[in-house]
Image (cartoon, rainbow, N blue to C red; front, top):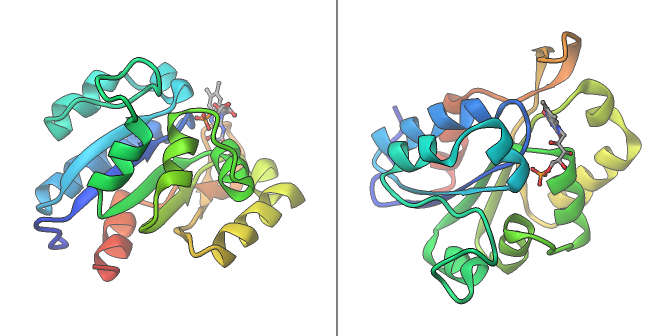
Length: 179
Ligand SMILES: Cc1cc2nc3c(=O)[nH]c(=O)nc-3n(C[C@H](O)[C@H](O)[C@H](O)COP(=O)(O)O)c2cc1C
């Protein structure tokens, strides 16, 4: 297991079916010694209950720019974390981040974040191979975002190919190398 003692991680969970794997990732990061604050998109909350992440992280889960105890939730989240890992990263957040769009808590926090950002894409193979997605990934790499994966394999839609989110262990290992 990686040693992430004392590292403050902001974990962004987007609306991909692999959101359930982010629960295992939260647990692994906590066991590795990190403090984890989870930020979910509205779509992610349709797939996994925020309570799951609240229980695993021991902290409130951020889901909205507007329904928050903080006056500037995107700025507060960005200031407090040492790194920002988005897993799963949907085609949507990849596109928004590549363009600098900030129309919800996740994308606003990406734009407000000035330390290392990691993204673990997860989507259907056609979505992953679409020229628009590949252009967006290329732009994010040029902007300094570390893209982890995706793996090639069986997808929840029943097809096989590139688009599976990498394992929580691979994400934790990648983060640990950047300490
Ligand atoms: C059951 C289900 C699973 C989905 N899985 C994915 C996925 O794995 N990857 C992806 O990019 N979009 C997926 N989508 C589509 C996204 O949820 C949709 O693009 C949404 O707008 C993403 O919002 P977000 O990026 O704010 O989370 C899925 C949608 C549904 C209904």
